[in-house]
Amino acid sequence: MSERLRDYHGKRDFRRTGEPEGREGRAGAEPRFVVQIHDASTMHFDFRLQVDDVLKSWSIPKGPSDIPKDKRLAVPTEDHPLEYEEFEGVIPEGEYGGGTVIVWDHGSYEPLSHDRKGHPVDFAESLERGHATFRLHGAKLHGAYALTRFREDNWLLVKTAEGGARGHGTPDPRRARSARTGRTLAQVAAEES
Ligand code: MN
Image (cartoon, rainbow, N blue to C red; front, side, top):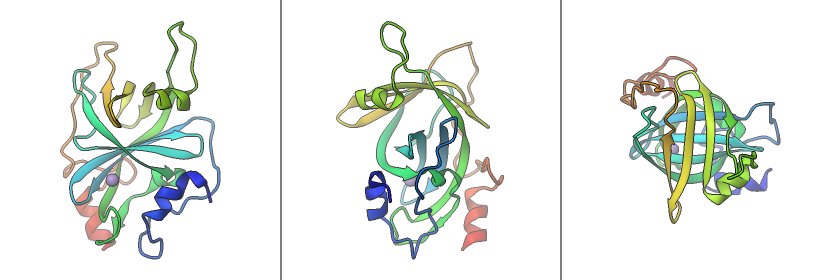
């Protein structure tokens, strides 16, 4: 089992939760991203970007916005296995992250990070340095975004202004539907409990 998933495994009892344990490697050609809505003790969005064989993860209380002036706080959480992109369901009450999860959006992304001279830099390295840019190709989210570390280990997720795109802001998490199954949180909760 990947050392990189030690925190993920340490927080969960896989006899009780239906979340994936994570298998070794499965990296495809294009890196993946997923945004999940998680109705846990507090409602939040989870934003995950594939870096090598894990999903680097941030919890975003208000969710990502597609309006360039909106700065969204993103707090890092433990790396998740790649299969978590498909996870939708109910984590039992009393377990870590207990509550309902839907896949709000997913797809591939293109790393865009460059150094001052315009040369591409390694994406994992740009995250380690605290600033990474990337273009999302999702069902709902499209275009270039930046993640920037600003204090201790808090980050901001911002859509970069390009092409005068008109944004929709963030949807109401209780009315939003899964990009995988079209279901709302309430429908997933009713069907899986
Ligand atoms: Mn979460």
